[in-house]
Length: 316
Image (cartoon, rainbow, N blue to C red):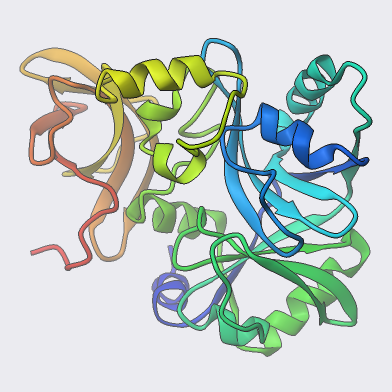
């Protein structure tokens, strides 16, 4: 990983295309009411220009998708993993019954602009998390959202595919440095930002991911999977495994087993080598080993459990 890419994201502005993201548009007069009853966060109270993070679950509380919900004057935009778009559509249509709501996949390209100078590169005002607005960029109208699920104080940019190249050129001219997906993944590991597909699947519950407070509203009414969330909350939120960070002695690949006192206690999900911290990873760990500071092993080499996000100080 070029150190310049990492430095751009931590000290300036960086740009990466999120080719694994897609946008689904919900339209119709009851779109917000319907989505409010389906998703884990409050959608009904959002005004145009506002947004939220939310999850779609099945009745057993398993996560079908994590998404960004953006309310506009004429639609609700659902930014989500591209691989989950068909599943989300099928699930929403199954529950829609006679509700006057329609769904259409957008062709938008999703860009991430991250770093302390990202706001300046985009020339947008201070935005609340998931707040969004339309702006001209590279000769095209784009939608820019403050994206709290991205690392390094990120923004998500939705742009038509035929204008994506000119939008990226405009951002580079404004000071954003293109970075690789490898660098992006190291940044999100450090910042404790799990990614659906790599770190979150249908096998997981919201409590296990550490994302409950961001993706869930405790004050809203029923939604699919709500009973499971409420039951876990009633038990203090205790689950058998949770997502944690790991400082590794040696680089390892996703899927590697984590051991504690001779027993398998987890598995690595995302891995990378940080210019600041060395080899790092995200992993789901059994409750017997997920306390920060616990000494574990990966591939026979020592590793240490870390609370997310990783500490900001440099490694000793």
